[in-house]
Length: 158
Image (cartoon, rainbow, N blue to C red):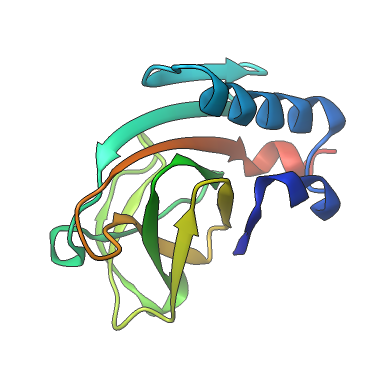
């Protein structure tokens, strides 16, 4: 897991230059323009962005999830929320939606980490990072988030 401000993303050297340009440009536009909910593909599904607008919820109303095929880079364009993180290998599978959807719902003990992500920050989640995002930081709040899905297989072929 990596948590940081979006302007620091280039220093991690995780993406090709064209991918990084797509991610940073998309984040900038999401803040400056009235970007609607939906999906934008880059490289035919190997990298895509999901714009989400929602109200945060209570932790009791949520469930841990993890992904095998894609990394999650979740960027907060507006608002703030908590992420609860737990080591995936220590969780029990509740529902495995793969291969149709790259999501596994899990039962975990108490989270290892709680992260408060604010406007301008990103959380990069790997398969070992089961996560529960969208959690209110005290009260319900509207959040605008861009979730970038980055196919892991594509990373390993370069």
